Image (cartoon, rainbow, N blue to C red; front, side, top):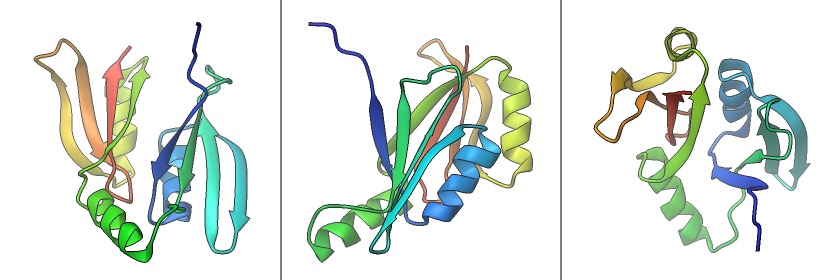
Length: 132
């Protein structure tokens, strides 16, 4: 069996703000934007990885209590977001910082061997960017 990653979903509370962050700040390509009954599925991805997509969505299949619980977890940063590689970590950090995004940690050498920084997307999801 040979599996490859196709797409991953990130729960967001404000699709428009998420699009601004992932597209305008991080520079991911907008591939698709589908709206239906107040929900959106925004597909973004890196030009260098055309077969891998991130779907930003405010849709959650569950009860109203489930939606409230997940929304609270996302807002508190309790759910893991996505991790990226950057060719130039310092320049990427400066662009993200200058956008006004919430910086969790500045570029630093981590004990697990990576040099990275962490930021929260507008919904509170933790996003890490490591030196490629």
